[in-house]
Image (cartoon, rainbow, N blue to C red; front, side, top):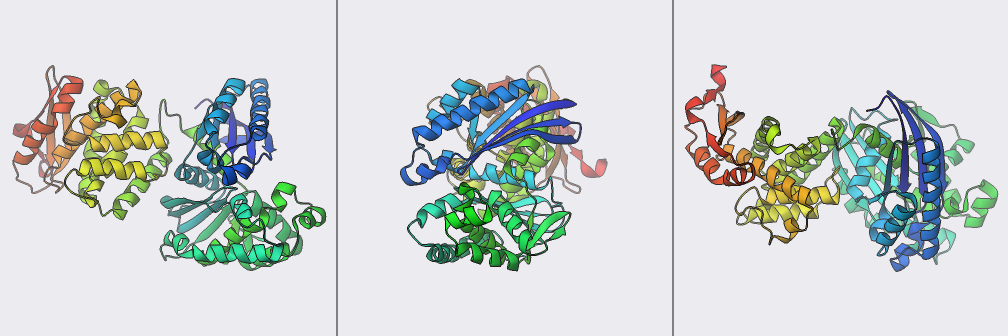
Length: 520
């Protein structure tokens, strides 16, 4: 990373668009410009499915002004993401195109799982998540992101269509008191779904982020003393509940006039607060930590540490693989075989770098495919590679975008049987460089899978020798093993065809030079 850098960040939520320019120097970072545009992209989207022209025009104009700020302040890297409202807007491509044309910003419409990953990155800039289980919650305008971490690793992440703006629209005809009761009743009806992600285990800390929880904490502070945990404000759940009951008795205009709340905060603070409170009670916690950070801080961390053209942050890799393992467990995958193939795929990838010429980002996609290549067995063993593709495509994986997940799904699909073909729709629709990546990663994955043909982790390592016409594989066997690897040799001969087709080298198992762990 450059020693001194300025980064421009845009977080397009359903209730507002946030702009930030930060200066990074070594491990230090500071915001030098920050703006919030209260354009409600979700206001009409959640009712009619489209963003109105007035909102598009306001957003494009805001991006144009932000581009001017970026140019004036010498910004070297930018990142713009959009969440729930843009995911659902039928005319999102029009807004994306007009922003690109007017301000040279590429907007990435991210999935709920990606949003949850950024939430985790943002929260851990303020809260130490390394020990115990943590519940992280972000109530936006259109969706609620829930992340559960265990000793810092993501255990589960999910997105629910329970945003404050969406709930406001759902019960817009109700009076203040009735509105409060209807939202509470609605959340109780969904309690079993939300509780699934807590898995019955105790929660060490509950960190809530978002403009509404920040405003609620400010209101509580005016009434009662607020403590701290890890140097972060910690509001008692009891005090949060009292504040919500008082707010529920007021009209939106009274909240503006008497409490000084902004109009776009005054009408969403109660539904958002109900969600925060409901989750606190489900988690069984006494306090809600309010770190006053969120997605945009996560975006900044990602922009600083994740440059996919050269490297991928270690934390990002851990998050992706944790999510893959969680998916595998959900579908009853064969964990020992998956981990064996993962290890062997990594070893093969690293030792054949001069052949495939792929970067660390591609390595992460291979790792994900290695863990999930057999997950389709849960549907049916026959044709399970195709079932694996479908399941991966249909499941949010934290840390991977939709296009990345598509590549992982295809690599898993091609770990056996037919090689990639032009008539395969999902494959042929890719850009040429992505088709080449799929072929190269699938060729490596086939060899890794062949080396564990017995599904017994007999081969614990592999050394590669690149010849003129062959790729010689010298395996290391588990201590005490005496197998001749007959099954593995046949599997490599059969599954090595793709590698030979892609790289022009025939993979061969060097059975005469097997290294046994006991010989080391």
